[in-house]
Length: 141
Image (cartoon, rainbow, N blue to C red; front, side, top):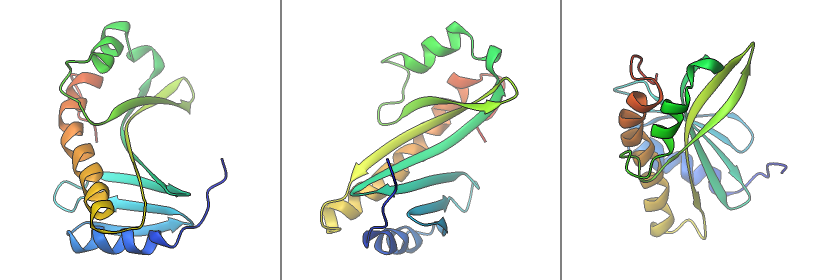
């Protein structure tokens, strides 16, 4: 799917900046969101009317993600209720574990503003649990 430039990107940037996030736009349709206190970075891409948010947790050797760790990441009672894990090939036998969330933008009214802020907030909360699920002996960032 080819990313499309959406007029809402500037509004999303402003909403996040007003909430104290350090926000930049490194590429068209892309926002980099940094939580200032922790330094945790969430990457967002706006494709059409969907804002996809990704928080890279850790890059490890593929063999490190054991069936037991995978089972804990996918368990319905793992404490992560709003985000989902994905694994991305990082090359050289490594994999990057990410947490992901998304929201649909309708008219960039107050409900959409709430959705954007909630999605970012949920990722930041979920990463605290995720770092123990994905790699119990390492931090996610």
